[in-house]
Image (cartoon, rainbow, N blue to C red; front, side, top):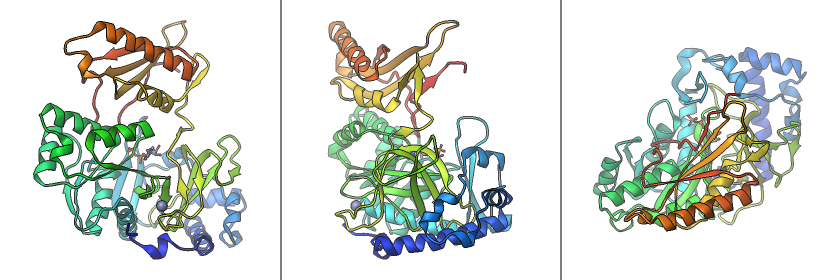
Length: 436
Ligand code: ADP
Ligand code: ZN
């Protein structure tokens, strides 16, 4: 499989690390000189650009947190005057103000470059027709993919999310060969196609899908590949760094290669902040080495994973991050027990006749213990005609298996087809109604 930029993606690690250290020194100097927040932070930590000689010195630098971006909302983290900014994106953000990312002309070029590497890694070339159903707008997904697909010369269909029937029709009419959207939305499309009487696998030419922006399990990958008849690639990114384009799987599907000449990755112990060696699980921290408008230094993503630096059979030498295992802040504590949403997904999807549409609802009725409900759809065939005996059996089975894996009991609500709300972008899996 081709590599978009072999020079950067297969650089011997020693050279790569030298380049990273040099870029780190530069970005520390630049942010210290232009961003009051960093100037103060570096002074407090008594660290100056000239102190950075190798990547070992990284640990002397302070972290940047999401709250720091919020405190400096909207443009306080920019290193350049407003006239040099050509684009703004922002993440949805669940509470209050969004997180803003700014781009100069050069940043847009970097974004196009890393996204060209990304789509190439999934085998997309100038011969492809890319049906891009990531949202266009402030969300980085749509325009990010657009840049990369266009740069490799593919034909891009700028669909954005929504109007699913129309998406299915145009995907067929325009002969899409690659699909880009959230993993949950790809299943919504498959479902809509089935309802329209369109055999997705037979009628569509789509051979690859690049799915990300939300967590998804290997079980979910198997569902998607089976239902859409394509090879699914995981892609990771975040607004604070650039958007999509931070890392992506290669044909080995054994972790996502990080574009390390631009994004310096580390894993830390979220409790102590200590840097952890390759192979250990912890919180992913990134430094944007080349971003002009808004480079973040040691940004704590809250995403949990592991890093590996061995050379990959695909030829790339860049480090790989495993699938995101969850977030340091998404662990739910239900009646004192730690519950991970992704474990619920994994368990549900291992059970036959359970569909990949679910929601976790937690509540705390006044003066009572927490309640945990798992709403999940059962296979449509159990509803036409309705087979109450089978549904009861299935409900008991889900209840038993979840209790075994979670260590806490959940009330299971088996739902009919399409009862769980579908999302065009990131799916809302957890509804926590507790007042805390
Ligand atoms: P939004 O506007 O959608 O909130 P963000 O850029 O802020 O956009 O979202 C970034 C976050 O999305 C990441 O920190 C991570 O938690 C999640 N994310 C992105 N891609 C993936 C992926 N492939 N797997 C798991 N989580 C992901
Ligand atoms: Zn590889």
